[in-house]
Length: 205
Length: 205
Image (tube, rainbow over all chains, first blue to last red; front, top):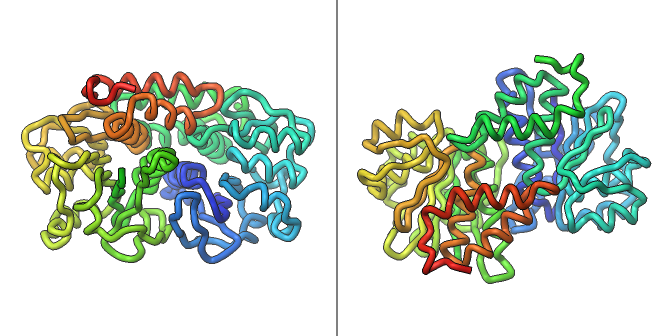
């Protein structure tokens, strides 16, 4: 599984790096999450400049895509040239959007009438884009998932691993990153959030 | 409060960025967490190259210091020239170490005989350095805190905010980053972890 973590100027570090780091726990099994950006470097909402690992066009080739969040998502969502560079196919790809990433997903026409999650700041803009927003950290419909609240990115990562590999692999990755002394509780909480949205036949460990 | 988030080659993205992003929720109140590194750029354990915001020597000037973690911490801990560049003073600074950052803290002589937290991988090396490791996500003694397990970085950040500003500010920052629909539960859990270590007189909201 090659995964594009879409990361734009003004990005929220939590939304890109929590998902990417948890997904990269699967590197020994051949997975790789790549920071994927429209330009060679992008600068976070807190002024950290990072180098991309893949260009934006990699999104169309990846097996899975995480759409990160940031303070400039509204501009990007209103930039047809930028949107045209993000070619996603939910029939072939697992697609996960975090916070304001849900707004991009809506503008790309990949949410439709289904309920979605986003953060409290982005919520009015997502509703304005015609999406029904629910008060929950995570929801998935077939191959498209959305999450709301920066640290809900651990649920997106767990869902991607459970769908692309197994529930056991998702639990292992979460167990590693969870706080010492609380690991099983963190795994149980995340599994409780994502399991209603898993096709158990496809993803059983 | 100016905070140095010490970030070395091979760094774990979770350990540097979760703490930095939560601390930077306090920017409207004049706080700033700076990615602080020994070289102009550092590359993470998953191959992401980032630009530092401050040189390593900033650590000595900061009001608070977070020592991040990574896959090369043992090399750094055995590099006297590197250690000499990190001038910390727990009398004047709040100091927080995450996972293998606890090994650096031990090598800097800032733990002594007190129990500390670290991750399961680093644990044997920290014990070898003479530290008593406890099976808990977080512990603090006066101005020095340690945490174990990548996502325990949210407890380090909350403790720093509670100590440097107020418990109410810490709760606000955590509330913002927590998953939608679970926000109060995340705040309550973090507060339950850090409150035994707060001087309530100094940090009451």
